[in-house]
Image 1 (cartoon, rainbow, N blue to C red):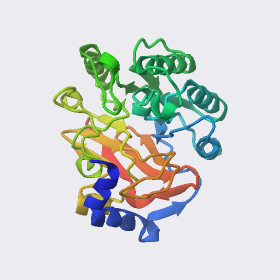
Image 2: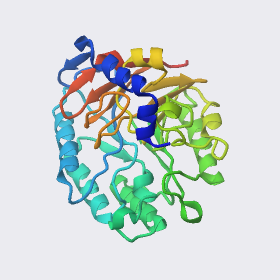
Image 3: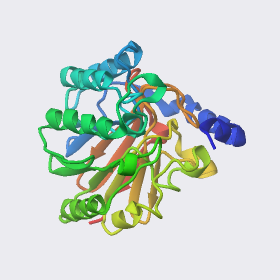
Length: 332
């Protein structure tokens, strides 16, 4: 089932997800980025699905404008996360330009995950004739150079202010897939060991993957069969072994939704299940569904000693969706 079929199959929920997020207007604020308190330990800005193309300037403009606001923030931005689908068609020209832009415009390090458009869509629409294996290798090479790391495959970890971001992704097994992802045993073991280390002293750990986990955040309504198949790659059970795990994903192109939409329609931007907090990001570069449709949307994540605060916002307009914010208490 496509997203379009899901919209028409759940048309009332689709309309109400937009309505209950936009109204009342007291749920939206226009302000500078000054929302963290003095005892904040880390601020990370979360975006996904930039879908840049070298010859399509608007989406690069979205990134530059969003980063301009971040550069003028009243607080320190410690990291930016891009949860995948960096490019639209996996061509090296677009990927190279993206890394040039973030080097020049981002006020903080950008932690990147590769999505299906960065690997699975290699060769799509005759934009490039490279294989999926070559597309994956390109991402690893550019990302390693940018971050100064030596990841050998499409997964790695990166530490910011003592907090670990664990990036997982498609290993393109046997030629890979157009939309799905594969993880081999070594990557599952990597995830397990990194989580054990990251959470040992009670700190939160952040897993970043383009694909949502099956069944989370209304995935089965918005885009059935788009998530990680737990019968093949059971990342959910691995994460549930540890306290204070946050899973950050994109892919669904679903907009910011208020907590009222979560309550009445079970369609959530942020959901807790068996101790793991699942964050599904809207698309930054394209139109969204089942929520605020506009481009430029994402979330600000703030880490405190006792909690993590997640504040959805628009990076281009500086709108803050206060009726969609969540505070997650940490297990001590």
